[in-house]
Length: 330
Image (cartoon, rainbow, N blue to C red; front, top):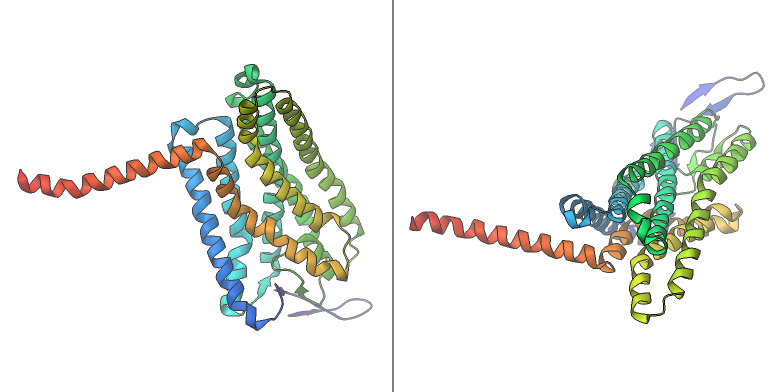
């Protein structure tokens, strides 16, 4: 640690933070470690599989699956922002993270959360156009519009979070250095600062409202119109089929925004601190894992694409086994 002087007092400027994680319950450390290793492997495997299918299968070259591929890529980055460091802490017992490393994790975590908010709202708008305005779908959701929506989502999120992270990095942290979380999040870091954080809190609230609220409102409005349109369908079979095309996305949106509201909207208090830490797990760890499962297992197109990929793999393996025999016979 570095010692610096001030006109009024001497204080210690910290050079690293300690991520307290889930506490010091030794009897659960191994179980938690194994569980998160399995979750991380499943998350990476499932999302990379979805990305591969969307890129390789021409049947999935549609706006909905283009957005789904972007979402899966985001989930790969999202999980890799928090889980590897947490797993390394379980494995080595070293739960420290440098100040610069903490700010980097804070930036990428916040950046990816905002991008996901944008992508989920864009996907809900895509479902709205497909169900409520099917004749105009190709015109509204053109390739150029899709590109603008996706690139705009990533750029807008990066610019806002970069400003907030820069403001947090200008704060003074003079102890204690123990972060009451398993990753570097906004609120736990502000609680450790010995500077006045009221201006950053206000700034984050304003830009958070601008960044998060509009996508949430767009998502809600889109599904109000979608559900209204579905109830107007006279045929039960068509109604069920139409609802099936957006039910997977609705499940993901409900889980994601539900956890965000609990963690970030409820007031900070010592009573809710541990509860918020527990509810951080679903949207930081579990949601990236279940997203490909929900979209693939509940989606006929993705299942068919996976079946075709497996058939090609089996045929390719069989041909490789037969080639040596054909060469010997020749």
